[in-house]
Image (cartoon, rainbow over all chains, first blue to last red):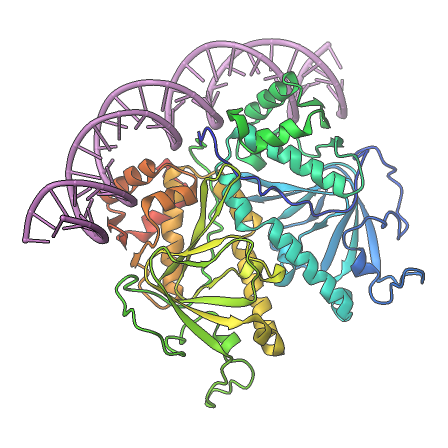
Length: 261
Length: 261
DNA sequence: CGGGGAGTTGATAGGTATCAATGCAAGTGG
DNA sequence: CCACTTGCATTGATACCTATCAACTCCCCG
């Protein structure tokens, strides 16, 4: 798509609530429930009703699980009766096309819910894989349905996700060139991490160059070249998967297609 | 995006219930309510509760409206308190990006609901424009909310639409080449018209070449060349906006990226 | 020490945008 | 009813972005 100008940035809306400064350097110990919920996007599901500012929250049964790099959280087609939230780390979502090729759909970072968009069908629409050591929190969907406050919260999440994945985003992505796409992804991650209460300028990409390329519909070599170029142009710095945004404004401008970068 | 192979077709799911054989050749007369509802996707909203097979349906207040080509149904940002369904014709949805360029998001054909994805926010997310003479049916959202049967129907529609617009579709579209995209669009329209009870092989495109190009992230010249090519290869025939699918199987194969067409 | 995956960098080929010219049909005003 | 206008569609020539192929480095892990 060699549009020289154009592009809306109706940008990726930030939808999250938490972070993961050291994605792959956390304790591999078994997990006690209830850690790290302060910024969790789904907290309203675990602590429904009667959350009067002072009273101790009534939690639903929420089980935490530790995944190692490459470990499968769930697979496409598998029945879904859990609501899963990432507590620490990052989850890659992917499908396989008819030719057996992997297609990376994106990454779910700390505090975000995974697989929300297939919850209504009770059947996962894609595979979810840990990109490093990752802790997730699982809540029974039955439990969620029981409380009407929870239901309202669920619908709110669904709507938010729908807004996030809506056709506007599609069509915008569809006509971005390589630099615009990558810049948009970086800005998106930045906003999501910031919404999580963490640094908007320094975070872990979670995905490999190949995964990013796959996710954006580009070649891994293109990602590599672009990261080098962004770096030379003082937009950001990358070291392995660790990214530091240096000039977010300029990066956003690139994502917006301004100035024919 | 010059991917030579690949592509899933997790295809565009068909979501509709009606058609428009003569999109721009219908009576311009004022409209009496209640026509043409047999296949309407939103019929459960107009005729909620007590639809025992025999009893006459109890309708909600549904006002029909006639639009001429180019007329605006609603505009981005405008408050939304109506649920709108296309009775006859087709509605183009679009936004303008930061550079003031038009971005066509897609077309809503007869029987489909327009603007469902912004209903929860009560504010339209894009403009909706009639592509020709078009009749729409408007139902007050308040009325819909009143009946719990209606609510369930609404959630069902929301879910269906969410499934339709999900990130899988995005990522799949993101890596289709020009021929694959156009073939996919044609197959999508075919399936949607068929789901509407009308011909899967002959229908009105609604959108102009430019709009199609814009919608798919391609140049209008590319669309023109491809339609010619598809025609020469015996896949379909087009005359102005009127399309006739000749070999749907082959077209689907192209959309799927089989055989590096 | 060897092997393999991930990342980088260079050279080339290919798909599509872009520019430009022409044709065609519908609408408009005389 | 006919010139004029205007928008849409088609077709050709060329430029450019990015995929692809290939070689190399680096690092982790056995």
